[in-house]
Length: 445
Image 1 (cartoon, rainbow, N blue to C red):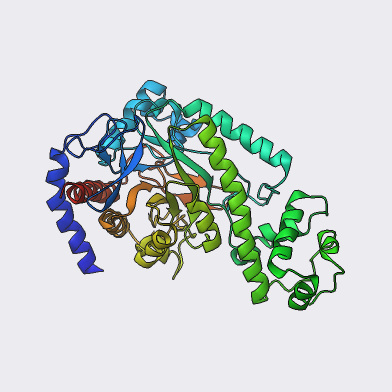
Image 2: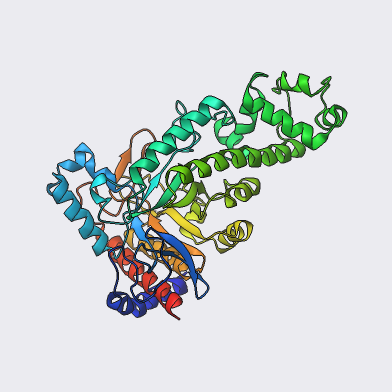
């Protein structure tokens, strides 16, 4: 670990100069590294490195922070720099510059959408893992009324953004719950079980039974495998499955395979609808939590997205063993995603945290001090930058935000008074400069 920290510091010093000398266009792209342009953000591969391309036709590696819209909360409006939109825009841009960032991330206020590259989200479903139990639910995505509402939501979002040259692309649902085992353990329900226990007229139930019939061919074979006694597949369609042992390997395998059917259906409709109303922008797909993206879902996604977006974690800290996926760059995991999908990867949301007496419980992996947290996150940022299929990196939180419902702090780059966590901030600033220098060198050589 000490060697990794030493490497981070050395790289920062070596790359800072080349970063500062680089000329950039209005979007942050390097003017010396050119690529064909679509007049909106696009993708290219240059010298074996995947990269975004700005509307002006230059290679671009976005570094930014999510949730900048938090400044608009009443408690932050008391800060002098956030008391009106003009002041807030000035401060937001100052912070982006200070941290050697070049993007506003996701969940951005309207005031930056004509000034900084940003991402926007179209939530497809209500199975985001962060939703409270009262709002978390699985939906019948095969149902006509769901499809109509989905298309209406997509149309509205696309018409709002389709001509904005600062928009990089569309994310879909933020941290959807896919894996049936994880879902059963965490929520005591899962997407497949929800559909198979709908009534016989439901579109999702029909899709599930059609899947079983196609796979098993005969009702006898299905009954033998599941230990059931249905007369025919019509009876399966009208039956319930509460008594199935969901821990059996064949059930988990079938359910995981059917998740791919759900994803194929949902992603195809979403892709087609976005392209109908906005053919200008990239599709960045769902913001998967690392480990909650079965291969059946990834293979479906690869057909309909330009980019695989991943959030490493988070797990609530502190605690021994929590959050290793968050604090250490998972080379094998990222290689697996790239191998399965053959798509470049965007690290759409990541950070680490540090202990304070006032807020001993924090989201993301917790370190004992700002220094240790900053060193670990710096290593992560640099490892991402050195990986040729990684397209960019978004820090999770702009401002410290206390989540009373979970009893934890979502720690940001700034504290609740709008002041930088200075020891931590200095390390992130240096790492970002180094990361941009590394990527630029890869693209230029």
